[in-house]
Length: 554
Image (cartoon, rainbow, N blue to C red; front, top):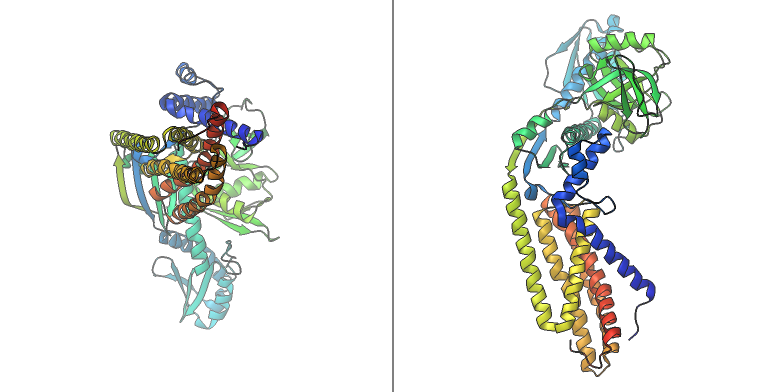
């Protein structure tokens, strides 16, 4: 029997050893979780309390500490499905446009006469002029206010449509801008919710967009759905502050009525800023991605009248100096004031891409939710129910394991025992990979693990049946084993490829529990292929070299 090359044997041993180490923390889940929490808190604060030091000592630093995260159905927590009222944003945008339209038409007073805003449905601006013969000039003037749509699908389009109906101008957002606004509104809502939830230190929340205007929020470990709703409703703290200086010294001491804040993007960069804000996020009415006069991506922002006055006075007195845009005590941008910015509108320029300017606009608007959210579904799952789910999952996995082990040993004797050893290694590798990538384990995920155990021995069954066929044809034990592994490989590969395709379809088309099942299924297919084909052969070859049997019974 020709043995595997030495390098293959070493790779198999290294991978199995890594799997054992990486899966080990899950056997001491509570202690390792407390260790990880303490390490995170100490890193954030820079100092350790006595309790944190005790928790940190619960697990050796030299060992891996990554865990499989427990999902909502296993840990307990809150589930919300929220619908974002994106139509509110259209109305806000149009309302904010009215002063610009009014001021633009005032320049044509001789041609259009008096200008009055007329009642209309939300999201539509109707402006009546007293001299209908000046409608063409009014149309041209208002159309000049249009800006290009900043999105990949809206290239070549403008953000507003302007029409004439009798003696009225009708202004509304274009279809391309509505689509871009929907995307930005959902991004902003997701960003705000994520920041609010992360702030309280919850573990592995699920916050994702569903469909056109819905957001799924699942937060393990939180007390109730009502508590989660209150948390989401909290307003983020956005301020515009004067910058004293920047530094790379995390221990720099700010002066009186100053504070030290970190840069959100550049690690190791800090700013000393005035503690009193020039303006706050409550005075910011809008921020949108745009292009500057050179066609480069930028961000336009607008304050309300109170903020506009304060910001205009500040920029007039501080030309050439930076000011910091601070969100929850982190600087998201620190542009230099190029000129006096009157009127409450300004532009932030820099080395932006379209994506980064859009992200900055999202962060600037993250001081409050952009639109009202209606909660369509809310559930609270208690920790007792989560523990029941864990116990049920353990029972299912144990029963499945016992039945598979009993069948393999009853059918294939000692070779079945070797397959069971490989199956144990397969389960260990699966847990190790799930822990390393930070996957969240749910009840469907446990079902995927149980299914993987059955699929893993399928490959061994194919291999052993091929070995039996070779033995019946009178071939030697060593040659029969070698041919059995070689000739079963194509059938094993075909069956696993079809399973991978199925898993990929479930992952990309499905959502929630279906995707959790698909993740464990896909990883399980990979590990079962490895253990059935390579680990089992390694064990069999090692046994054959040690015992050198003249006859074998498979």
